[in-house]
Amino acid sequence: MSKLFEEFSPVTAKEWKQKIHVDLKGADYNETLITHTAEGIDIKPFYHSDDATPIQVPTRATQTGSWYISQSIYAGDAAVANEKAKDALSRGAEGVLFIIPNNSIDIEVLFKDLPSVGIQVHPQFLDLGFLEKLQQAQPKCYVHLDIINQLASDGNWYENLKPDHEKWLAFLLQHPGYFSNITVNTSLYQQAGASAVQELAYYMAHLNEYLNHLEQYDMISAFAKAEKRINIDTAIGSDYFMNIAKYRAYRLVTKSLGKAYGLELEAYITASPSLRNKSLLDYNVNMLRTTTECMSAVLGGCDTIYNLPYDAFFNKENEFGTRIARNQLLVLKDEAYFDKIHNAADGAYFIEDLTKQLAEKANDLFKEIEKAGGFVQALFDGTVQRKLKESDAKEREALETGQRVLVGVNKYPNQDQGMQEEYELYPYVKTKPRKTLIAPIVPKRLAEDFEKQA
Image (tube, rainbow, N blue to C red; front, side):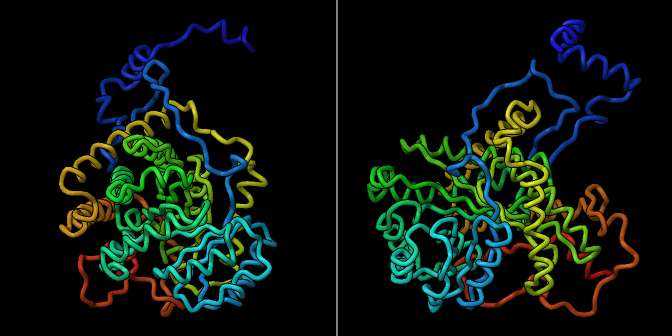
């Protein structure tokens, strides 16, 4: 093999570009072959080692170096949720993610006969007494608690700014190990229309609010000694290569922000496909979308991935949708062998360049947010909400004009599968008029306008 390659002289980036110009026969190189993205990044037609800048992306935070298959379970009823968890674990899931709506849940029933590790708990409330009971019953579970996400999504704190931060700090430092970590949920921003650069920048500003709070209370050293990590809860977007680079960039910006506080921060990334590009029109295509999205999350280095059933937003939880979603991940892991190579994207010039540019542009936007007073202030000023609406509007315009394609929605519609008269779940944005401190960030699917016209 080495002798074969010795017969060919190396070709420089300049020579490749000259050859392309010849083949274009007078057509403009930039207009014809350069792709402009919403992130402000220009995608070139080829990438070459001459232009490559090697970067060191931190590895996964999992103990095995591989990724875990999880399943999200709404724990409104402890006994039902427990049975669903045991069923999922017996059929290929390696962990479960409990969404707990209130503190009346019976912890003993919920965790009966479940493994001690691999369980994430996402409480939708802030109750230190409940968390203390949970720690005693299931000390090795991972609690994901994000008070700023509560403000951004609901428009109000759980209680108020000061008591919420006091309770958050107590939760973070009073519990040992990974039971309590800093959690930043960015799925809200992505599903409201954020570009990859905005998502990463808002993540940095969001995380910085927590780190700055620790510094104000002289708790940085205590946090470092506690050996905590950063939980990042994310939504996977539709751009395959951009999302591979996005997840790699998450680790770069986490490391760089930690250095500013003298910390060696480790990120644990949980990912699930976004609802942003899912549709009621030709809804089976949703399965293809979630498959490629999960692939990009794996190749980008996510730690835990739980799939989104194709009908999650219009049907109640059902055996078929849940099983297919889980099996999609099992196929990627056990049949496509996506667990055998831990760093498949390393050394790919295109991905390396995208990763580097995303991290740099996100850092620039982060600095602008900090200069204006920080992320919470930006939420109260309405800056974040306004920028997301602008990004959302541009994406919708691209769909309307056909610049962006959603198969089955604005291109190749399935004439045999129209809209149903009724759905088990209301598939559109629900509004609940109430008094709020800020305008809440509202996620919205791109296909909604087309569905209402169908």
